[in-house]
Length: 465
Image 1 (cartoon, rainbow, N blue to C red):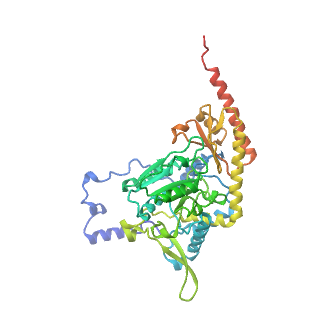
Image 2: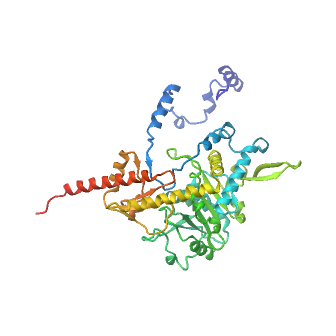
Image 3: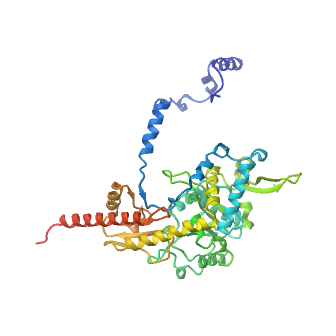
């Protein structure tokens, strides 16, 4: 069926019935000065063959590099079955299953996803799902303000070691609603918040945001931080990497009573890096706050005949119903990525997830050990870590990165862009996809490039009289 099904004859007949000559006459109340003069900057359409060639050219620009980047997007092995199943027509074209009787397969899958996420995070309830990790933090902040009615300040304390992109997105979405985000600085030696430096009387604040592992890959003292926030009447928002939860204490067990809301990005669970997305946001919470949770929640029930069935149990964010009272106005549900994540977790199981997390940690230990032996390269922080680490370079790190890029190596992420005190520092990540040979390739190239840059630096220095 064509996108616009009306024929020229039908359009002419409708216009004659209305009593106008052209379609443009329908918009005569719009002043001429406000009317578009056409899309002059948009090029003419191309043929299918030309479009296919253009897309192949652009795809070829994404070289298969040896990647040690992290900072929220991680390269993991994805079993072939994950996307073979995810892209089947039953899943690939499905969106929000409003009609339960026609969508039992999709609804059951989403229910299984929620069950897996609550098990992984140690929380009571999971939604399915949100846009991405950054917007899930913004939604968690809004949710905390609604849920913590004892707090009137709308102050959100966030550790400075929380992903700066997440913080920026959260601030953009919430700042016009009277919500302020205030940072708690990290200790320069450990790369984590020093518990002893937390204020004894912080005043009224609504929630504390803790990322574990934090942006630098380090492990925060989550128990003490959680209990400190609860002591002062605040909720705790946990930003987590789901893969790390196969090794680390889940947010539902932080401190004496656990975190109140858990959020993050589900990309490590079966979503390829794909030139920047798409990803999906995860969110879980304690049952006490479920009615403040945005997104969709799938429930299991039985019908009048006793047959098991699945349906949308709670969708309190639906703006078409609640409008300004909706818990969220971010509509996108990343159901396709949730499908991939569910299949990924099903295939790996608890032991498989543990193996992935453990291998990633061990590879990063090996990377730290070998790279720290390179002259002019020093690990910045002395704390425990998961699968990322920050290194200080004596030579200009951008030149090192450019030289590595020429060897098809993505060396890491510059942290000085967001943390001026960490200028000339590079954050590297090693997942289970890296072999010892891969790590040796990176370290050998960095050593060679550093020696060459150092020699060039000394050869260009003027001689002293």
